Amino acid sequence: MTEAPEIAVTTCSLAAVQAIHRFGAELLSHGCHANVIFEALAHDGDCALAQAYAAALFLTQMTREGHVQAAPRLAAADAVAPHATIRERQIIAAIGQWALGDSAAAIRLLHEVVREYPHDLISAKLCQILQLGVGDVPGMVRTASIAAMADPGGYASGLLAFAVEQAGDTDRAERLACHALDRNPLTDPWAQHALAHVHAAREDWVKGRAFLRAHAASWNRCSSFMLTHNWWHAALCAIELDDLDEALRLFDNQIWGVRKQHCQDQINAISLLARLEMQGVSAGSRWQDIADHIAPHAEDRLSPFLDLHYLYALARAGRDAASYELQSQLEERSCRTPIGLLARGTVAHARSQWREAAAALGQVRGNLLSMGGSQMQRALFEETFRHSLSRSGVGEARQRAYA
Image 1 (spheres, rainbow, N blue to C red):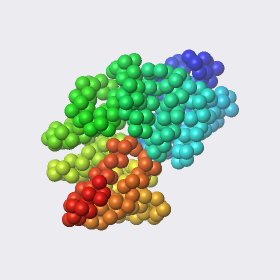
Image 2: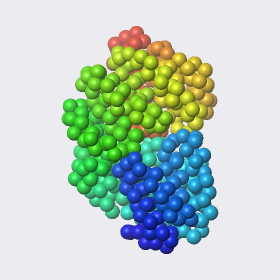
Image 3: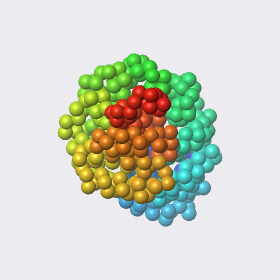
């Protein structure tokens, strides 16, 4: 067993431990070299924690293919788990539950790890990824608060900043994010992202755009998700400032085309292009290009948040068979949840069926938290509802009732 700072890792290789630490740094800073975890496996293939982290890396792809790739890593971790520490076994179990689709169980296990080992920021980060995916804002605050007490001013403060902003405390979020950026001014894009949310919540679009522009150069070291997502925030600022040419330029140059096969990049592109169209911008052939790239994942069924975005893009691109099939599956599997109505309203809006879209979306617009994603991401469905309402010919008095 090799001792890492604060936390033990079961391995005979110091080089494996060092690679695990580099993996953690890349994960927390949203760097583009998280695949360094495979160096740990090259040094010690029997390191259970490294196998589990490699599985987690595949799971963050949020695709069925990623789950397939994670399976042998989890099997390898399970095989050597009896020799691992209690903490490592809990992490392996949590990632295993994640792979099985039981996010609630995975969150419980990871939260317990953070509670017992508050310096384990990798577990805190993985926990927040899962909590965000199911809309567990109170859970995000609880877990990140524990980690931030152990690591004040560091990456954990960025995690907590985002969590408390989602909970509505923009002042505290701003303080925490600024503390995090004082420690890591160039390598904490998640804290920058939290401040982008703060400016948006305050509708201070000028300050938000200026802040994002000032930090944009530091995103070049980031994974495509964080790179494109922070540019997505900048594009939303441009839309709010009625700079539609700039928003479309950002779509073409900074958001779509960076890594078109990555699902998170696809989500950024879909939600931005939908917003631009609602502002009167012509999409041209862009929907066709997006639909071509999401088609392999449209049947993955891993997240309603992803599914609804895929559905909108397929419908806008005129992929009738694929969009109707996905809509039918979502309505059938989610008949007792808002997802079915969201699917119906999403397709109706994409097909310019304004009354149908407003009727469906209006029934669920206040019940979107469980679909996952941030407030700004879920706001797309509020925007499509209001756009449908305005285009449906409903009288002004009726529209004011929905305000």
